[in-house]
Length: 235
Ligand code: AMP
Image (cartoon, rainbow, N blue to C red):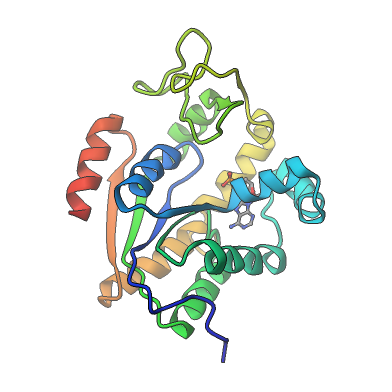
């Protein structure tokens, strides 16, 4: 029996956000975070922060990230569960985790052990070829990496080569520049046996059993249409 890891006495909203790299999770995630005042817990951003600070965890994760491989489960799962426990007591939006079936099962087990409910599972649907094009257009703001900028997506195009939100300098993300790494990340995402689509299926089946609500969004719609659809689905 796992020890409870979350404070289940606090009533709060918990949301899982799925979508391949390039599907606009950052943009829709920001909306969800703001609407429900949630902690936005993004596994990739946590790893990048550790890499930037040169921590032991960052050193362990860095090589996997550069290649587009998953950081091993025995590092990732405790790291995410610990972050949820520390930062997510008032509700969380989890983004980038779970990425495979084992992570999905472990998250579900931990939530069950804590008596915690999952309110929504949101999936952004995007064909692989479209996701690949979008990834090459993604630009990261040097001031705040949650500011969405993409030269291939109407609505979030940089302005004058600078961040459209704050005017900060933009650069490409290291692991987006290597086509092999991009490919590998999408291999993992679109793998419906053990990869991320298997994790999505796990939670879609939970939704079918009435354990949570599942919302699918067409990521090829324009950004405001997706935002409106999402807001309506969560109202
Ligand atoms: P992302 O920003 O979500 O694209 O994540 C960047 C990189 O961090 C991934 O390519 C993985 O190397 C690592 N990472 C992020 N989330 C996970 C996860 N749930 N499991 C394993 N590795 C992860």
